[in-house]
Image (cartoon, rainbow, N blue to C red; front, side, top):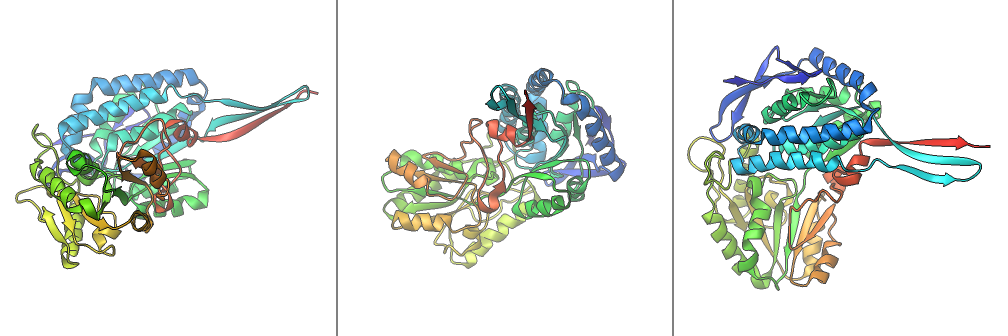
Length: 468
């Protein structure tokens, strides 16, 4: 069994205790990671605080360091991808693509400007607004895209001049620990510390006196706990939380043409995507034809071990999430739902569940009202668009949503009525590095990506110079 190490002050650090890491394709432990102690966390925080004093000073050096980080990831994309597939379950080609996408985000972030805004300049005074780093940032990341979502935080935080203590999910810590060791070779000691452990470690990071900002991606329930724990110290927060994204399909689309796109909008990464389609509303006139086409796609997709090149959908990542999907589907059956495809776990070891399409459900059914975060999709008919919009918005969530129509102007107008952070037309899950990404309502606080994501790791400082 392979044991991975943390990175503290630029050095590999083993744990006094370890945690087993399960391969979701087998349900068995295949490696272990350190269980960070309070003393080791203090050491990581102290290291980050010391490194901040000099890291913040040289912007050009930071930009080059991000390029070096990108190159380090690209050089080890195959090896990192294999570790990611074993701990997360996704197909290997998708895991390698995630590593390369993370490298791209380092490269793109390195090009973003950190402006100095001159708001007044005359013979009497000059007033400037500067974007300054917070200091140490605590970054806590999820298990569905552990590498790229970590880099969404690392790249802008580091460019802004912060230092970081990163904690990955205990279900997928290995790729982040490996990344920490790779990046330690190109970053000054203490600039990036990577620690691993269970939920208690995340709570200690949030309550720790050193970090001035916490950036978290994960569930609504945990996000609320982080907000409460950060409040006494008035830590700044970015929270990217869950979604229950609706897709509204109008009768003017061709079911045969768009079925595959809609299917992958819902089932990519086995449905374990915050912005995946989780409720599919279809106008009555094309409801059955589209359902038939979706079922044909679902039945053609191979579900299996991500190391098998033929696999399109891997396992659900964690046993608790696997059991939750089973519970929600069984609840849907009890509520009168009809299983068009799937509906039962696959035989054998591992957390495998087939792509499941469910019809004849009321909006009150848990599979509709809650975020399933797995390969089970309710397909719901509607009679008019106003009804569909009302049902789509009747939720605490507000991450993303989409409208599907051949009338692009109408689609854009309807997407603008969705109460969510991103409204798509004839696409879903297309998260661009050029736009802010975040959620409304319970789906989050703050934004990631692009100049907005960079600004989230800065605070304003006004420099007011009196000339005479």
